[in-house]
Image 1 (cartoon, one colour):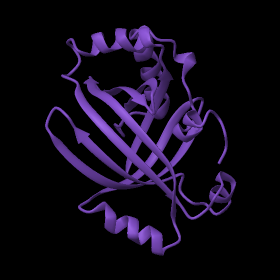
Image 2 (tube, rainbow, N blue to C red):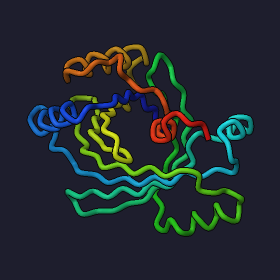
Image 3 (tube, rainbow, N blue to C red):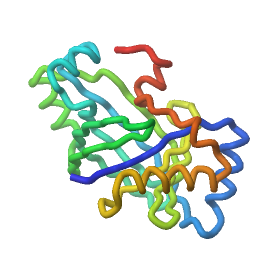
Image 4 (cartoon, rainbow, N blue to C red):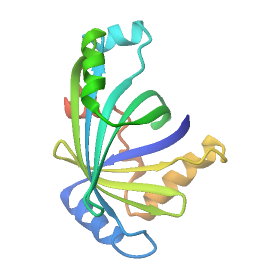
Length: 190
């Protein structure tokens, strides 16, 4: 199980364009162009039911396509999330799957249903221990920055993230701590 600490910030088109230019230069690694499709599943119809029954916030199938490499992979993931001071902490279990249709059939016979889909067109790069994705998620422009190292205290990671956001010329106070489902559905609770 990996620990992720991340921050996501909405961008204007000019901020997106400026950041795109920055990540295509050193010291960033060469960006990978990724297409990610996430299909989320649940046994319940509302967020309240999922919380009351202690269902993980994320039960999903993700398909990643790396346009740089011409590869495509699918994963199954169960994730539990918490938000602390606007920074997202994730506890995640993930595994490769060969045939997502088998898992979809298992969901169907287990009374799970698809309740949400997210499509992300992203440019993924690294700067030191920071992973940055410049992205369009269901058409919305954002940057997500995460640190996956487990060897630093969470407060240090939080401070490093905020300093890096400022270094990029962005305002860390604009971070968006809502889930992607809430963002895409404009705050409507399912």
